[in-house]
Image (cartoon, rainbow, N blue to C red; front, side, top):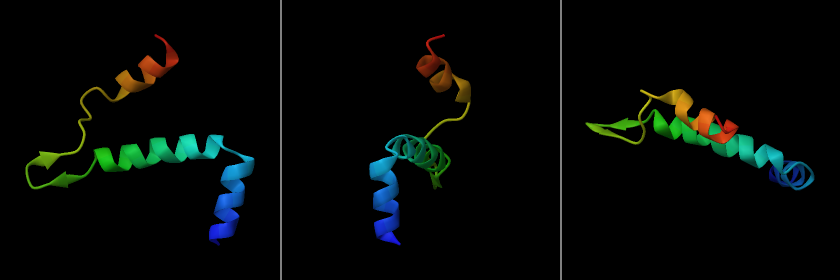
Length: 53
């Protein structure tokens, strides 16, 4: 299983970018008591910054 994942990442490195974005979105939703790892008030700002708008 791990060999398959490593081979997929080696042959398609863009998968790692999408996995990092997905992991960041999930971690941004975590809440530990009153502590937030991320804010979702301006969710489109990061996408706009990446898109150059």
